[in-house]
Length: 95
Image 1 (cartoon, rainbow, N blue to C red):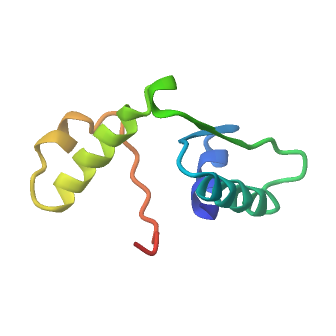
Image 2: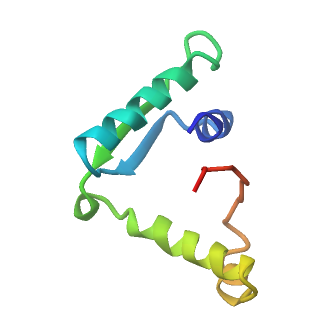
Protein backbone atom coordinates (compact mmCIF):
# COMPACT_ATOMS: atom_id res chain seq x y z
CA UNK A 1 0.00 0.00 0.00
CA UNK A 2 2.91 2.32 0.79
CA UNK A 3 4.30 2.02 -2.74
CA UNK A 4 0.86 2.55 -4.25
CA UNK A 5 0.22 5.69 -2.19
CA UNK A 6 3.60 7.20 -3.07
CA UNK A 7 3.20 6.38 -6.75
CA UNK A 8 -0.33 7.75 -6.97
CA UNK A 9 0.63 10.90 -5.09
CA UNK A 10 3.45 11.43 -7.60
CA UNK A 11 0.78 11.61 -10.31
CA UNK A 12 -1.27 14.16 -8.39
CA UNK A 13 -3.82 11.70 -7.02
CA UNK A 14 -5.25 12.79 -3.67
CA UNK A 15 -8.07 10.28 -3.22
CA UNK A 16 -7.95 6.51 -3.46
CA UNK A 17 -11.24 4.66 -3.89
CA UNK A 18 -11.18 1.03 -2.89
CA UNK A 19 -13.93 -1.52 -2.91
CA UNK A 20 -15.15 -2.08 0.63
CA UNK A 21 -14.58 -5.49 2.16
CA UNK A 22 -14.83 -6.41 5.82
CA UNK A 23 -14.56 -3.81 8.57
CA UNK A 24 -11.22 -5.27 9.68
CA UNK A 25 -9.72 -5.28 6.17
CA UNK A 26 -10.96 -1.75 5.49
CA UNK A 27 -9.39 -0.57 8.75
CA UNK A 28 -6.10 -2.24 7.78
CA UNK A 29 -6.12 -0.35 4.46
CA UNK A 30 -6.75 2.94 6.27
CA UNK A 31 -3.87 2.30 8.70
CA UNK A 32 -1.54 1.47 5.81
CA UNK A 33 -2.44 4.70 4.00
CA UNK A 34 -2.01 6.70 7.18
CA UNK A 35 1.47 5.25 7.61
CA UNK A 36 2.40 5.96 4.00
CA UNK A 37 1.28 9.58 4.29
CA UNK A 38 4.21 10.24 6.65
CA UNK A 39 6.48 9.80 3.64
CA UNK A 40 4.65 12.39 1.54
CA UNK A 41 5.77 16.02 1.51
CA UNK A 42 4.45 18.07 4.42
CA UNK A 43 1.00 19.46 3.71
CA UNK A 44 0.15 16.78 1.12
CA UNK A 45 -3.39 15.51 0.92
CA UNK A 46 -4.14 11.84 0.36
CA UNK A 47 -7.26 10.07 1.52
CA UNK A 48 -8.69 6.60 1.17
CA UNK A 49 -12.37 5.83 0.86
CA UNK A 50 -14.03 2.43 0.78
CA UNK A 51 -17.18 2.19 -1.29
CA UNK A 52 -19.55 -0.69 -2.00
CA UNK A 53 -18.83 -2.25 -5.40
CA UNK A 54 -22.13 -1.18 -7.00
CA UNK A 55 -21.69 2.44 -5.80
CA UNK A 56 -18.75 3.18 -8.13
CA UNK A 57 -17.54 1.68 -11.41
CA UNK A 58 -14.70 -0.13 -9.67
CA UNK A 59 -15.20 -3.07 -12.01
CA UNK A 60 -13.08 -1.15 -14.53
CA UNK A 61 -10.02 -1.80 -12.36
CA UNK A 62 -10.86 -5.52 -12.41
CA UNK A 63 -10.96 -5.46 -16.21
CA UNK A 64 -7.54 -3.80 -16.40
CA UNK A 65 -6.07 -6.17 -13.82
CA UNK A 66 -7.41 -9.12 -15.80
CA UNK A 67 -5.86 -7.83 -19.02
CA UNK A 68 -2.49 -7.32 -17.34
CA UNK A 69 -2.60 -10.77 -15.76
CA UNK A 70 -3.49 -12.40 -19.08
CA UNK A 71 -0.55 -10.60 -20.69
CA UNK A 72 1.82 -11.86 -18.01
CA UNK A 73 0.49 -15.37 -18.57
CA UNK A 74 1.17 -15.23 -22.32
CA UNK A 75 -1.98 -13.72 -23.86
CA UNK A 76 -1.13 -10.13 -24.87
CA UNK A 77 -4.32 -9.31 -26.80
CA UNK A 78 -6.42 -7.58 -24.12
CA UNK A 79 -3.45 -5.71 -22.65
CA UNK A 80 -2.58 -4.45 -26.14
CA UNK A 81 -6.02 -2.83 -26.40
CA UNK A 82 -5.29 -0.82 -23.25
CA UNK A 83 -1.68 0.05 -24.08
CA UNK A 84 -2.41 3.77 -24.50
CA UNK A 85 -3.89 4.16 -21.02
CA UNK A 86 -2.33 1.57 -18.70
CA UNK A 87 0.63 2.27 -16.46
CA UNK A 88 2.01 -0.81 -14.73
CA UNK A 89 3.78 -0.72 -11.41
CA UNK A 90 5.33 -3.94 -10.14
CA UNK A 91 4.78 -4.39 -6.42
CA UNK A 92 5.21 -7.32 -4.09
CA UNK A 93 1.81 -7.84 -2.46
CA UNK A 94 2.86 -10.88 -0.51
CA UNK A 95 0.18 -12.95 -2.22
